[in-house]
Length: 309
Image (cartoon, rainbow, N blue to C red; front, side):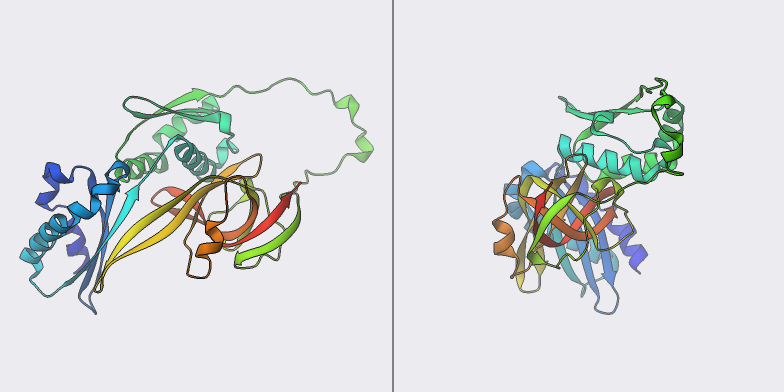
């Protein structure tokens, strides 16, 4: 039943109406036990002020067409997510995706991934070793990631790969004392911080690591840096008691070398405290680095104030 519902909802005829060209069906889930269908729609960022006006007709058309196929009696729940992208977020997503998906690239710096805004949308210039260009461009992961990106945003994206210059300057080994040289490289993954003071959410009991060493699959990782591009956002959830609007924050954490996109969903106890945080506040965060629809973000579970060294 759930597979049939998903196939049905992705091919509804009312989507072709010009009234909904800036709204897009994302996905849905069907609960057979409660006969409940939850549908999620994406909408263009600039459409934010018009969403409430468009919702009644869209939902009415959606329900009417679905009920033609499955009959009446199903409870419908609608959620709306604002589709937002800018050059900073696109750069972060590109760096995170390429670095975590292709170990052969050896990590990417900000200068390796440059994003500019054009009249048509966004243009990304990606510099990687020449021998990796064809491999990445033809890889299934890269093709799927581009499809997901375009499916979840209303902008146009173009990607240009360039050969990355390699520093092949010979190293003078005579400056090293062979006796004192270590047998293998020792990498310090920790972020240099001073005092860490608990602020909200889950307490932090370990030293932060640098952002570049975040793993997608690990939970309760700790990172530190300064808050950048802090934005308060909202999404609306339709419930049996009416529309419920919830607030969350997105921001970028900058540790001085790398950046990562972060998201925080507050509860009643943490809302007012997080609201007091401002741009460039130095913090340590505990949370989970997650991947959803091709985008990687750090979902914050706790915040502590930190002194960066």
